[in-house]
Image (cartoon, rainbow over all chains, first blue to last red; front, side, top):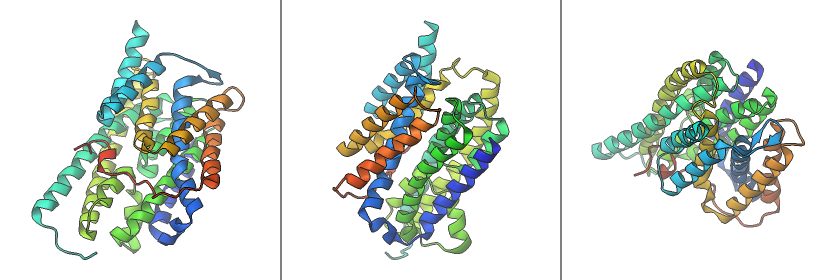
Length: 98
Length: 243
């Protein structure tokens, strides 16, 4: 675990430093720019799906989905980040109590 | 772009907005601390992640993959892929900040969504530097303090399900994804990526589905034709930045 923590930590710093150090024309290659823009979209969407609808290697539907539902509504209403995240956990916790 | 001296009113406004974003984002570090400990990392590992990696989405990705039972190294790979986002921000910010040497090396550490959002919108180098540094440093200090408090609290709570902390992670990723969904192509990629990841959950080791979903981005990016500007978060896209 420590290896992963240190490796990813140093790697993320180097990625930031590279951004400030590389010439700007790297971005001018359209394919590089498109792929780089889409990577966070794809990864974040996949993380949402996996975090909410799976447990280990099985697909599940439970209180977490209600939490996500709350998050969607809160985001549509342009609520602050903190309200979205805390609200989602409260909704999931309450759903489990009922 | 000239280094015109900022009028005091504008200077105050930039500092106030940047601190507001710092406080809102920092508070959210509490959630990271609690979730990370609940995912099986130690308190020390959790704090080192916030100090060293210091980029929220990557940190959540690493602990998220580990929580799902994935190998720590596939968590690290996901974190690094998400970290490439900061490289793009750097390419955009470099000509604005115009720093070299140790200043550039120090600035790189606080190059994140929030500092980019609060710096990129300023018209002058001085304004960009002020917004970037004030936001970056206040988020860094508060994010790390909050992470430590959250980690100890999470340690005391035990089961993450008790307070719905497991649901908080999905909501956090969705909130980070949300500002990027204004573009129809991005919505398509998001839906495809989620579908690919879920269909791989029963078939592969934990951690692999998320990495494989990154392949969707590669595929659409290489095959796609349309060109549009890099998405850099604006002041409205970050916590505390709604105004």
